[in-house]
Image 1 (tube, rainbow, N blue to C red):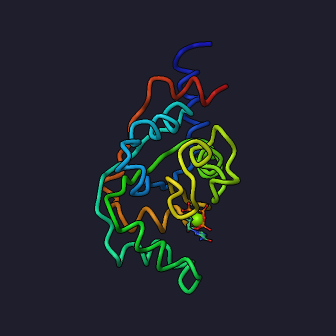
Image 2 (image 1 turned 90 degrees about the horizontal axis):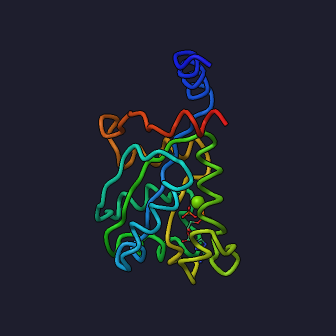
Length: 167
Ligand code: RTP
Ligand code: MG
């Protein structure tokens, strides 16, 4: 197939299928030196990193991020935990990025997370379960907006992108 036609097909696939999701590595992943290891899981899957930063999350940001859990028995512990040390924030893009990322991350309780998932391989307890990932497109937009300005979300082409998206 002509290369230009292939590129045009790729663009159409991209415009139809892509989702963005928000994820962050919780304090235990950062202080254990697992940033590279866990980010590699996302990269190896083929997702594209659009934005990333290491921050000390504020109490206000944590309460906003987890507002859906406000009032639950674990809420205060969750807020205290994610504000205890730096976290590594990321925006990822790809076809079905939300569900693909949730599957990479694994079950909320690491005791139930399958080996091969991030929580299955790197975590023991539900509070220190290594990583957060948005569970819907609406929540991804809401959550990433707490931490990233629109100008911080990059846009670029990966050399492998068209090949993996077209297959
Ligand atoms: P996340 O939002 O962090 O990606 O995790 P999730 O969707 O798998 O789980 P969710 O129900 O949204 O809970 C958010 C975080 O709260 C902590 N949690 N603790 N002690 C408990 O029963 C309990 N339940 C939830 C976990 O750290 C979970 O990731
Ligand atoms: Mg959740």
